[in-house]
Image (cartoon, rainbow, N blue to C red):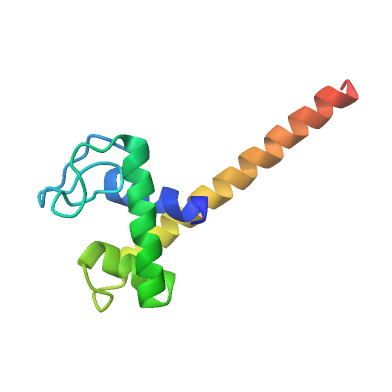
Length: 115
């Protein structure tokens, strides 16, 4: 799973709060329902389970947008607004990571060059 998609989904689902609980009882960073996932997952386990689940939805639905819709609505025929929201957040994270990587890379080059 591309890191920026994972970050976008986690941001939209929980705003990075590992203790988040939705009105429907979904829990953790990826907002997993305890009917289908153990409620006591660590944050790392929650992310791993959420990404595995999204990966299985991509295989079933055929594309990321439909899979994100199914992740949120339980069906890939729902409103695509959720998928759009996740992808907008993913684009922000992707751009931020590239900006920071470029900045960090420049700092390393300056240090190595003795500047």
